Image 1 (cartoon, rainbow, N blue to C red):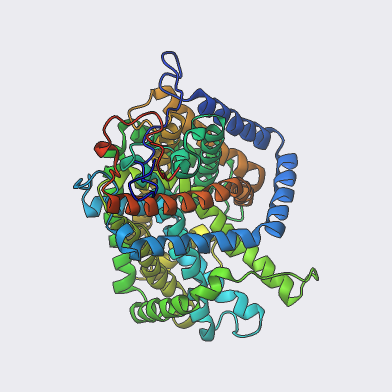
Image 2 (tube, helix red, strand yellow):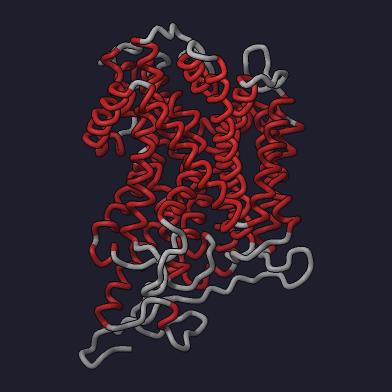
Amino acid sequence: MTDKKGEKEIAPPFTELEINTTTGGFYNGFAMAVAVPAKIIISILVVWAIFWPTQSGSILSGLNGVILQYFAAWYIWVVAFFVIVCLLLAIWPAAGRLNLGIDGEKPEFSNFSWFSMMFGAGIGVGMLTWAVAEPVSHFGSNPETIMGLTTGGTADNVRMAYKWSFLHWGFGAWACYAICGLSLAFFTYRRGLPLTIRSGLTSLFGNALAGIFGHIIDIVAVVATILGVAQTLGFGVDQFVAGLTRIGISGLTTADGAANTMGIITSLVVIMGLSTLSALSGVGKGIKWLSNINMVLSVVLLGFFIIFGATWFGFNAMFLGLWDYVIALPTLSFNVFTSDGVEGSTSFLLAQWQGWWPVFYWAWWIAFAPFVGLFLARISRGRTIREFVLGAMIVPALMCFVWFAWAGGTAIDLELNGGAGGVIFDAANGDKIFAMTEFMLAPIAPWLAWGMAVLIVVLLLTFLVTSADSAVLIVNTINAAGDEGPKARPHILFWGVALAMVVAGLLLSGGTKAVQTAMVIGALPFSFVMAVMAIALVKAIYYDTLREKAGVPTTYDQIDGATGNGLSSGLSDD
């Protein structure tokens, strides 16, 4: 169709995607083509890890080595691409003002609850382990120490420790979540499409996503989600057991302080039991309530480190580290270390370090993205794109930097200048925060140290439960073709048990290293899906700007008599 000037008209956008779901029976309301294969894949992984731990560990390790060898650069560059797209959409005037909903729609949650749920589900658990452990680790070794530019464990290496810590928990991490969440919120709440991963690709593939192609995308997202959350829970279980031991519960660790079988099982029963109960209550009740609690406790704990910890040291770490990070970000975002194959050489060690840290983190954030992204979309309806990017990418990254600066900075300062004598540095990663608070408070009054350990354990538990119950709800939403309504209890219970079994099976077969390896592998397919989602989102927004200029409807509520594909013969984004 053309107008009087002979130019193509712009058609309304694609607004209907029919995904077949089952009517009646056990899978009532679910897309069996997604739910059943996803359950089978996860069940096979659980059985394999538990009954053939040596074989599964060996094969997963081999696959991980191949990915690190051939796809390390891909992980580095694709996350840089996500950062660029997010910033572009935020500063692009026509895009930034678009509402993630119909025109005039207001947000469902207050800013405090929105940020609390976002932070708790996105990275909250990691703060309690890595806000102390990662700056400490990079303080000892990082690319600058490998190249001989700084000396590990000395004051001249503090800024480098924070530059790399901020890289891993900064804009790149949250850009992964923001791309996925922004795409889903845009296509779901502006176009009226199902709240499921495949909807983020409709501007490129249209109705083709209603069939097997779309099913495969959603299955990949479910598997990535389970493995990404399993990684978080794996670290969380180790720290939860360390905390229980600190408050006086014995018999949960081995001689070297690692969680034993009883510790792993006990922790998972508590965490997944509570998370399943919370998931049964839905987002508006259990998850919101838990998120508000852990945000309050987080502020209390962080305030303790800022006021009674290394206040000035943390201030310097925050602002000098942020400066170093921002200045180096363009280089860090694209730089790939290439090994010469000679074990022990500088290039070999640099490539190895990059595989251990940036590549691992980018895979983790990507694996976590379908879960966090869909959850962010669910709680961000009615916000503008600019507001979403600032709230889901910039602000949470700055909050992470604050945690790293004062929690990690206190640990480094106590070891450098406070006479800790290795008490903090020598503790296991999950135990470092407990070792630090005990060193600070026990000399004053042992009960203060015990009370702080209890607070941290409670905070950790709320973070773990928030992440796990959100994941269970999100997985069921994807399996139900984007239906956000209540799900039958057996399906919630299945995914709660399945998630616990994945974590337990991998931890018992190879510790957190096995969980990490499985996650890096599972994240790779979804990284390609996310890259295409980003392209599809930019294309859809661009065409919406053309529609607005031409007076063509852009949201599903404005389109009268939309057909199955919602298009005329004019120019469309499909």
